[in-house]
Image (cartoon, rainbow over all chains, first blue to last red; front, side):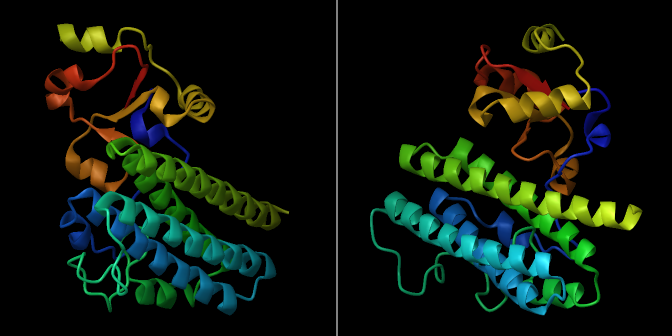
Length: 187
Length: 74
């Protein structure tokens, strides 16, 4: 590609501000990857639900509320994938005990702690928060594309095909709303 | 460079818009999107779904690629 990644003006999967990537390095097995994805979906759901309630912008609130509900469904899908991979029901306190991540420090996509992301968002404009949302969804899309490619189990691959497709649609919705804010600024 | 030329022979140097249109029109299973930079650069940011194969490992890893699929490298 001419110009390499510097020429690319689309979404790039990258760590978010203050990202702590150490817990991600410790994840190795397919089941651990799925458990980590579940944990990140939960963290992202909490972020969207909280910001959806706190933002003063009706369009952002509606989108984040929709996304929080979608993340809940993604968690159900991931739980089913985990049980398919391990051949046994997930423990009631899933994913505790499977991940070497302190369950209290909840992470979201991009490797940022949810509490830090919420604190960051408090002083930001809806447009800036959407920018963070685009980064979150790009990371989720990247994660599911890679899991879709790397897992050999056909059922898992199909599940990640659906999840990556949904994350892509979220990304498009978020980008579309972001573009409207940019246009409003220019008008 | 012989083997590298063999891998990349069908792909000329595409602009960003060509790549974007291509990625949008195909399922991820239909192509290889390869980041040939170093692992640290990949970790800082990469195109969604890109596979990391640093330049110095391309010759070795190329055997794992299906030669019937197009390769996009950056």
